[in-house]
Image (cartoon, rainbow over all chains, first blue to last red; front, side, top):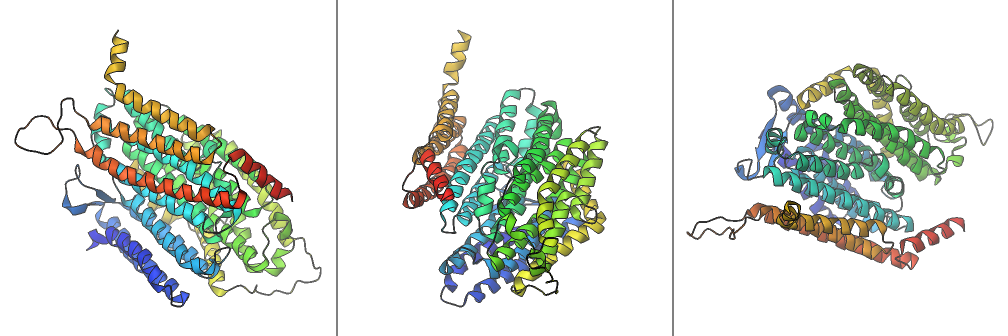
Length: 493
Length: 124
């Protein structure tokens, strides 16, 4: 039974996406409740799966029981199941929020379509995490990018069309260069299964160096475009800032991270870090990451639209993760994984709280945030927590990930990277603090200090508060999750 | 002569890469949105040709076993490419529909013109 869980979760998501149109005539609450039930069932199943993998070790599931060199294979280990659990948990939180705020900019009869796309997106995310096949990864990547772009363009606004067109063009170039890499590897190895390809790369690297290195370059470029790593980031701010709020949180917090996870899988399982470091790819990644950390923040400083600013901030945060990966040590990977988690939480909290402000006040410019804290105290407190986490103030999860990244770079004898981490943190402060100062210290109406909870729906408030609590929780008690990430990293290296 | 011989021996791979680069050039440099979609298609087709070329065996027959024996071509790349074609078709359809929407709202499908009109709207 447990061995079937990955497939069952995939089928659940697809079925849910198919069922949504059937409830078109009913009250919309029926659809959202059903969706929540499906998500919770899959969440429980994934918890069971993670527990089983933790106790009994990884296993593979072959479709149709074909052998791995013919058939498709799913690999379930702590890496895939653990991150599936994390992504699903975060999506449940965002989903609860979206049930009352999917409305922003979407016509009422299209709510259903939004949820269809959301469930297909989940299907593709789980597929990418579990699959153990290069070509299958490509197919899931395409499903993911086409659903993502549909979610961006579901709002019938002018700028959404151009943003999604740019997104689809660049992402397509990315996926096609990934596919070209797969073709080159297939030429050398004759397999698409990751384990088999990895084994034959190790044995035939000396004979087919040119092919394998070209494939590595194509695949890295492709995934780099899709993950918005610094020089390929131009599509991200428009796409993420024009999407509906709840899906901005999913896109920025999870989808970009998913491509980073594919990159980790590729660098460490497919090619092996020995080949990567023999080609000095890790130095290139380190420079790209460091540049991204600085440049993303620099771009963000001048932005007047808060959601656009958050988009640029994502580019900088992806830089941190790439930097952690490029160190190639257990500590570095551990820090990168922790930052995937903490940035997911913080970015979701930021986008959702900005979304609540947009919902309640209809404003999204930085200058309109004056005195916002007296009108929306809870939402702005969570926004403040997440922003402080982005800067790296202690007691938040952002501090822990920066601390670990700093320790990892010292451990790898790259101490100068700490300077870059600190400079990037200061740049973050330059664009987050003005909002906090405006919201908490400037007031439009002097004397109005009565504490009142803002009148937004409960279902929007609860997820925001939960995210705020989680940020503080992981800032105070990171040890358990860090030891998990250490186990995952040790297996990968 | 050995250099020329190498080129002739690998003409299928070199051709595929050349077409790939042509497609990429179209996507990156052209300002007409429909031409850019065509560029994506050209890139895709180059990869599909490359895949099929990998699977071919000199003197090979289609892999339908009829008792004659002899070398067969590798069927797996061709099957993978069927999936790839479907994916590229759906992406093309989607981006063409986006171009229709862009044309309806802005009245142009030229990237530079589009940027100009968007800036004008921002200012007004």
